Image: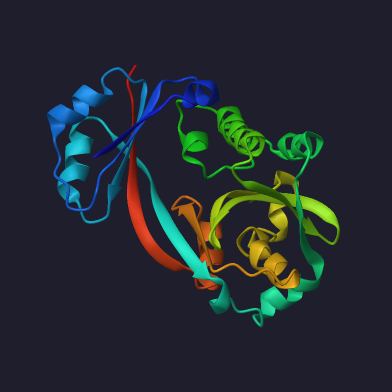
Length: 245
């Protein structure tokens, strides 16, 4: 059982938070779980698929299932650039690296409370849409100022419509966060969240080996896009939460 004291969440959501992740084959220990979490206000527990004993044990302690986290991946060499929709978008899409704090502020100012409406914080009645927005904005700002990831603006016909934040290591791209700004979400441009990195890498002749990312089961439209692009499911975890009043 991996335990993390998420100290950064105090600034993000105003609650002392911890996260616990169970490993495949691990047994449920009620006493250990209660001891580790009793001093926290918000508890997040991630459980691998096919562990009903853990799921039932968590439910008995008042934990609630809020989403399934689906980890997916796609090799660059397997991406279909001849797909009809990809070919339609290809001439119109570019990415621009965010390199200054002024450009960072542009991204942060475009992030609105309703932009991530399938986020578990957004959907949790204990929190608010503004809390969800602040949490993601703080994450993006922290990653940028530390220089620990790349932040790119997604451009469509020269217009800034969204962003994509990722971290690359030895040719493997970890897609941390991305989204289309709220005012453009009704135009079917969510497709670019999934494929702009492929298009940009192809245009710049700078292919990566593979991209990894994660998506919530609450975000059905994006899951349909990733399924259409034939991303591979690597693993799935149930995510349970509990609020200690």
